[in-house]
Length: 422
Image 1: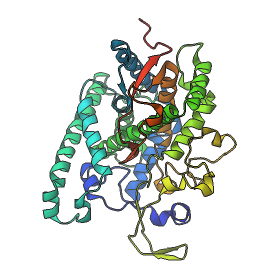
Image 2: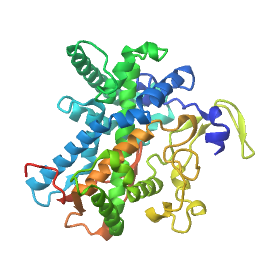
Image 3: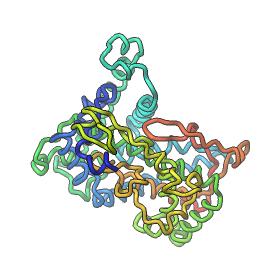
């Protein structure tokens, strides 16, 4: 609590990460930017323009269209081969790509592949991390060569995406889009760049690219991890699956489709999401912070530039806060528990707290809630025949987020057909 509230401003700095900064244009992105005026400008863009609750709602029709495409692709795959397993992990990456960039035909597979490589790389231990200034270690480890390759691909794809959107805007007469006309987050960023006077500073193209990478990595990793773990836990706990599906189908069965405007009626689903965030915290150690000023915490002297990691995963499983059944998946624990994950209750911090709290929480949760509701509404989910529920692999893999060690592969059985032509 002292790090994220009492002394929050003293720990608002990110420690340098030369390898990640190499990919995000020297720390031009919001996640890694040093604390100061530039970071405050980016934060303002994120919190007041890009990821506001109003903006997230305005993109609801885009989310609904992309989630419909997702469930239809699952339905097509399930009808093509009876009993075929579906790789939900890969499909969720595709969903975030389409919501952010729009065009699914150009660059999607290559961008997703590079993003997966970067996520896997960022989550592992590298000898080069111990000797960031030693050029020989960097060369021998292959770090420089790998990151140079990643950066070139990311930059080329980002330039291509920006060019495609700019060409479309030019074809429409070169006019800036209204908020109602903006179809994807890249449209929002380009509008902000064109109308820099409203921001009070110029949003550079490198900053736009940095935002795109941040949005894609955080916007795909966190919701995908949340959805994967929620479904995994419901497979392990069929009574929870039954309650969640019964609720979703009761609310939406009359219309035969899920509407985002009525997601707020899914009280039990929200309990499932909260319990999933608690038991499978997306970022177990949150992102590291660095001490900007000497201070004292709990009687200990904290020197300048001390790096701080907060183990929110351990806190969320601590029996002192969550009782003897802290390790069990029990959504009902939140029925009469008003603890919130929005940064004010320090026993439950899946998105961090303070100045460096995740600004995309509302965006990520909106995508996760809508997607999960659709997956539960349209399909029953079964394990492959060779897998028993009791032996279902729930091993974790630490990366940028805490993901399943193995991709989630399940058999979907259509209950409410999303393919009207069938």
